[in-house]
Length: 271
Image (cartoon, rainbow, N blue to C red; front, side):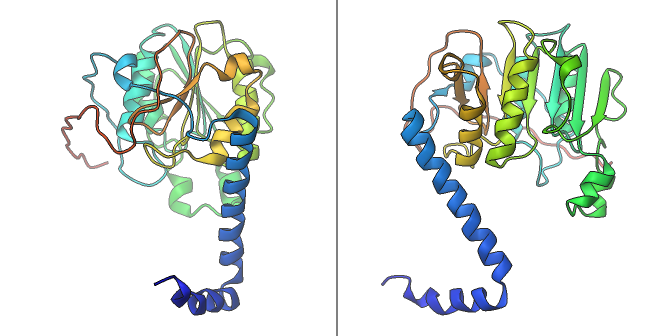
């Protein structure tokens, strides 16, 4: 049996909620267009080659704090990756595009000399329809960090001149649509301090094993050259892509086959 039984509900939605239908069709069209572009331009039909997270953090045994298990935050393994990479730069500068509540900043801050948070201020959040609770939650876990600098601005329009060539590690987690990711990626590459510096992009994956094609295209189109693109990888068991300075072993693991298991200890503290 096909899906003809959905024709009636679909037509009713077109009549009763046309904006939602058009939004869904627009998103689908953008995803497919970005997918086709990535395949035709870069030949990466299976996504980025994958690095095993154990090759970045071979002795992974860490504690993640200030974790909310709410929408809009990263996965536990994403934070573990950020912390593993941050340990390379104990005297370094970290900048985050799109920080919101500040969970990742709270986890990275103790490992680096300086952290910079860049995200919308309250007025900009309200202008895009953010609910009051989301506005109140801005910088909730990061505002009191002793080594933080908060910049309330749109990452796509900010003048980065003063920060160019000064950052050891950049975490790109702001707009997740293709045009915004492209702009953020271009800016991120200008901030790299030296040949040891790192970029991490969140939401490269829609899941742990499936690319988010809009973000993926934005990363590739925003990178300065093919030489830079060759150093961009997906990190296993995370939603992240990384730009790394060192030569690494990468592959396309079998989808759905586990190559490792994790142990998780969980406690809950009231705010």
